[in-house]
Image (cartoon, rainbow, N blue to C red; front, side):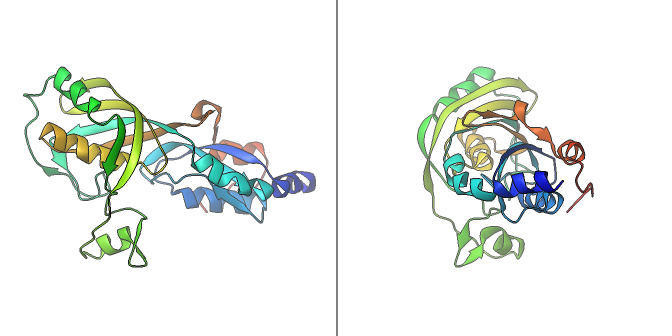
Length: 231
């Protein structure tokens, strides 16, 4: 155990499949306690309602976090058409916007083409972006008006993998700073029916794949460290 703890304090890169409802900080906190490491951080936040690849760096490898954060990300997920939510996902209640039975798969596929390349995107008000020194989500949850500046992001791939009733599944490859929730909202606006993100999974960061990531609890158990269910 002492040698193992020393190796994590020296520096390692860990690939974890983040569980649903956990924040990225939950995972960091859990592993910091379980592995007895002084320094640990993650290379790119995943929302609590998303699952998938989370890169964590310990010890000296925390110096590499920015490098991993800058790499292209790949996601799969689901948009629900015809409704919107204030958070652009299931954190807040859906509100009906429009019927979707007139949409064809061709219209939906054609709409994706307008989002390829450099696009202007505004982060959701329920996000960790700071405005006036406070996190936007804190202000939004207090019912205060939040205005965020748009930013330029790059989407290299955006494809529809299925369309049934008002559910669209997709695959996206995009740059650092891209909000898939905002893409869902903008996609719904483009189609004229509204949309929100109803499922999301990060499958890749650069050359790292979720297929090589470990389940959080299995990782803890396999390393014979603390097995508390939550931080």
